[in-house]
Image (tube, rainbow over all chains, first blue to last red; front, side, top):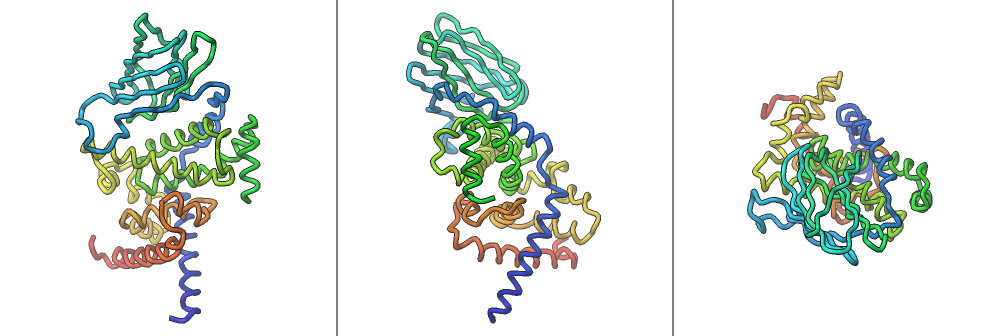
Length: 157
Length: 188
């Protein structure tokens, strides 16, 4: 094969790919709402908060390392706080049952559209139900006035 | 958009500039969509994993090591989330990959292809949807608008950068063969 052939093929490939790009723009364009929700995610920056670490998530554990049908368990840790959360329920009715260890004076469950203050009992236990959508995180205030926020968690649809 | 422009947008966004953030969203939404759809995620799942990537970026803005590589950072985050969605589906015994295409008519490429007026375009898209996974992933990400650099593609799909060009050529060749099959009715 001469260099000319290679060049001709590359040009033909470029044209074919450009054609596919035009087709994709018609049949598989991103939903218009995607860009607006991505723009809105900027307002969820909490740069002054301490970002808790995700220390365990059974949903991202290697396949086969947990039994099917068991609830998803997620654990977060920050300087003064640890949180363990069990996720049950299904799409648009996710339920959280959790326990927080540390000086938490206030706890909220946040989704990209709403914030739900949640009551924490004397043992550190809390519950939240009927959570809509598929993304959430927890934000907490500690006794010393610091704020702690967990990373976002994506729930199954 | 040059690396300098991208770094300066990241810098301005981490200083709280919403307009700079919006410019990043406009620049990369199509790329991230192409990555997620290349992994054949349903549209709703694709939108979720992309929103997660942006929410994670907000958290990481001040600590981002290579601001000029933010596109690759976002695309890699989307790929990891895609793999997680696929793993969850497998664990549940739900439909994966090929089965998703055939079991969800709203998402299936052949149905979407009805939007195309030209029959040849429909055949081409149908042939694309019948390609092996790795070709679909690579070609779909290369279809992003604006097209990504080979370096970003390599990082996102964890392929050596030198293999992108040859693999692209092989996949497009294969697409032409599949298209011939569609056109002559072989395998239908």
